[in-house]
Length: 170
Image 1 (cartoon, helix red, strand yellow):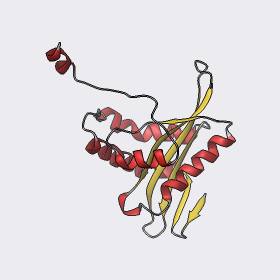
Image 2 (tube, helix red, strand yellow):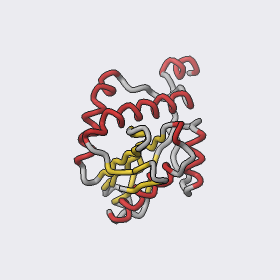
Image 3 (cartoon, helix red, strand yellow):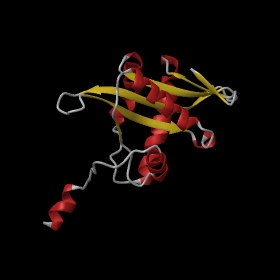
Image 4 (tube, helix red, strand yellow):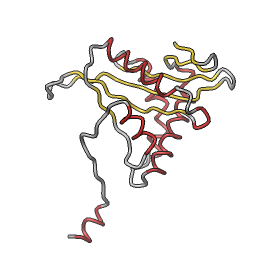
């Protein structure tokens, strides 16, 4: 738990936070889709199952799920998570993946994102992680700026097309 500016508290998420976390995730997904309409949207089933997904994350010791609580509005205004991945296929068999990071627009430019990431990085350090990865959508200039400023470099490009488009061009 960490208090910022006497107004915001970043803490480990609990079951009571799941509705707010779910709502913020859907805000993040809408933002991503506005940045890049080639992204796939969540199905109705995925949207319905999201709360259960967060409940599982809360109980997983390899995942740190954080929320940003605003004491003035008594509501959660941000989320972030990271998880430790073990994969023997790579020379780095244990690495950290930074997942969704979201700060509601009215609460940005207050150092909240930086503090969220800092706490996730501390979690990775305590877990013995030395290498990190993350994903963000092409066109999401806010995410690109944040991650590049922190030293992340693009290493893999994922492309997408509709089958009908490919068939026309063949």
